[in-house]
Each structure stands twice: as C-alpha cells, then as structure tokens.
Length: 191
Image (cartoon, rainbow, N blue to C red; front, side):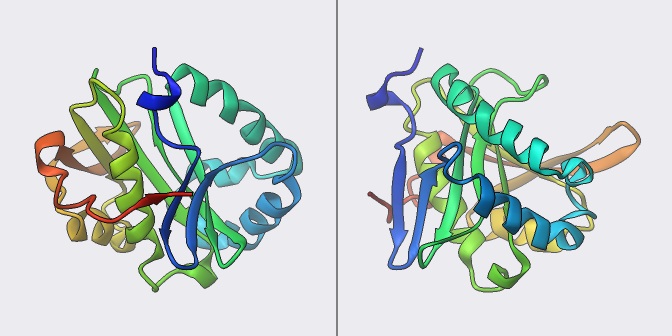
C-alpha cells in the first residue's frame, strides 16, 4: 500500500504556466466535459473512450479518480495551462500491466498541441511514477499511426520495445526503466 510520502504528489508545478493537479469532483465536471466535448474529433482516431463521451461518462470518470488514487491503480492529473484545464495525463494499471509497472496515458485539447505541453507533462508524470516504491518501469502504448503520441516517449528517452496486437489492432509499446529515468526527470517541483 502506498502512503502520501510514497505515491505521486497531488499537484506538480511543471514550469511557469503548466501545472498537473488531481482532478476535483464535482468541481472540475463542467470544465472537463467542455474540454473533452471540444476535443472529440481530435481524439476519436486514437482513444476509443471518446465514443462514450457524455456528461454522465465524465461524471463517472471523475468519481472514480479518488478511489483509484488511494488504491494505487491510477493517478490521473488535470493538465492545467495558464489556469485552464487543457487535457489529462496520468499513470494507470490495466488488467495486463506487468507487476512493478504503470502505463502512462495523455491527451490534450487540440488548441494545446504543438507547444511541448504533452512532453513536459509526461516528464513530470515519469518523476511521480518513480516515487512509488517497487515501480521498475513505465510504459507508453499507442496506435502506430499516432505520430504525435510517439514523439513524446522518443523525446523523453523511452525505448520502443515491441509492437503488440490486441483485439485486432496493433500498438507500439515504449519502456523507460527506473535506472534510465534520472535524466528525464531533472526538473519538476511540487505545488
């Protein structure tokens, strides 16, 4: 079991203007729903959960965050740029995630792309993931056609380790081991 001292921090100042913070339910509901609503067409090719987008889905997503945080199965942050939510980034354990591993997921509103926000947010999430004792590696998994997602692990020193097929789709899998993470995580501070 993780404690506050051995799990990711609730908020991380990435740099001036960019912060990661735990989602607050129900306070973030309206803003997050709007951001997803405005991002549906941008996200649909890459993220199947977008097909379930509705106010009820967003409320359910937010309501599960605290339980996952406390259980150590998911640490999802709001990506906040200049005071506004522009996406989400976090660490997740899935049914097939190997022991000692988190998968990193991230997405941004289309107006927030192309500025290095995803790379900076994921760098901070890497540092938070390795705060958890027993975490040996972090993975990024994405569709091969999603070149924007591929650039993030490439920039951060992840190694592409395999391509896997699940439910008829191929995915690229990138890995960063704890021993390789020091160079990646050089600059993040707590909020």
